[in-house]
Image (cartoon, rainbow over all chains, first blue to last red; front, side, top):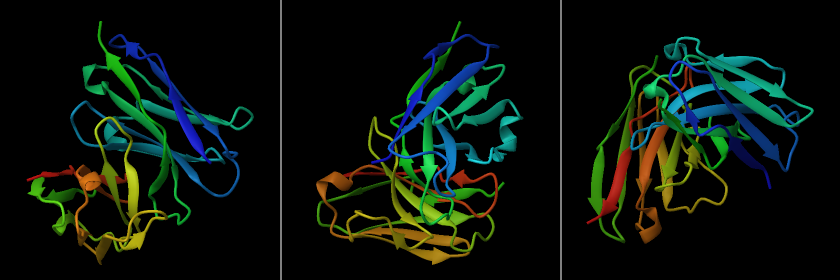
Length: 121
Length: 107
């Protein structure tokens, strides 16, 4: 069974860089033509699509996030990553990593449990 | 960006009821639409993809319909475990976007 697990610092100071890792188990991130993605959810609010990355390294991200995000992957470790520069309190959220569905219709079929990131001095 | 608007924002219902949630896109998304259920403290769970295709192992009381700009999620014969928040998501064009959510609670 495919599993995804986010890991990160939990607390980040304003203006610093946030780095998150998603570790995939149960399947290789290079098997199939799936996309791997990041979604975030501020406490008590709705979901925000951040972006996706294919095993080729090609990415599609959310322009409204002003290019502060960078996605990458390490196929040898079966991990993919999210970096967010110059964080502010508005970046406080639960960050989820996820995998696209079999249908390829843009849905996310498998999700990690999420990791809470707080931005505070 | 394509804006997704769900209605209602919240709805109260009883076990056994049928509930319909609507999602409207600011421009046509064909059938590139998914529905998720989220319970407190948990990650979203995929219910429907391609507007009307039921995800594996999701109960058949969940159904989706629509195309273009107007979509519905219908839950028939509500069960206690169905009380949660529901989100639609378009995947027609980047950036993909979610609706603001519909909270379904017990009357």
